[in-house]
Length: 132
Image (cartoon, rainbow, N blue to C red; front, side):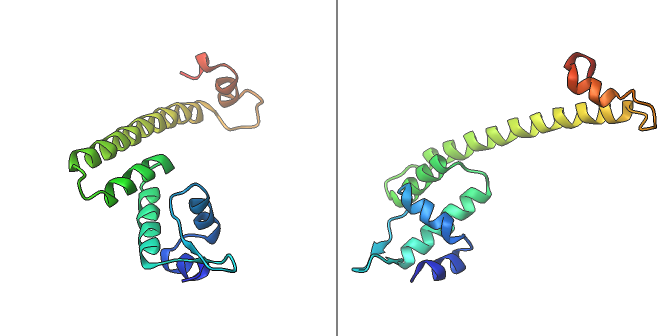
C-alpha cells in the first residue's frame, strides 16, 4: 500500500504517518525509487497508535504500549501500569479544568456586564488574589 491508501484506511493524515516514521514508531519498506510501501502490519500499528493517541496517550506512551503489544512475553501488569498512570494524569487534568471552570464561573457571575468600566473579570485576571 502507498501512503495515501494507508492514510485513508487508518484515518491518519499522511503528514502524521510520515512523522511516525521519522520518529521510528513505524518502519515501512522502501522501494528502489524511495517510495514507501506499507504492509498490513504497518496499517495495524498505525490504527493502534491512532486509537491510543485518541485516548490521549503521549508518543512515548504509545511507543511503550506498541512495544508491549508486540512482546508476546509481556506481563499484562506492565500494560495496566501504563494505562493507570495515564488515567491518573487524565484525572489530574480534569481536576485542573474543574478548578479553572469554578474560577471563571465566579468571575463571570461577579461581572455586571453593563456599560460601566468596572469589570471583576479583568481585575481577577490582573490580580489572582481577587479572583476568589
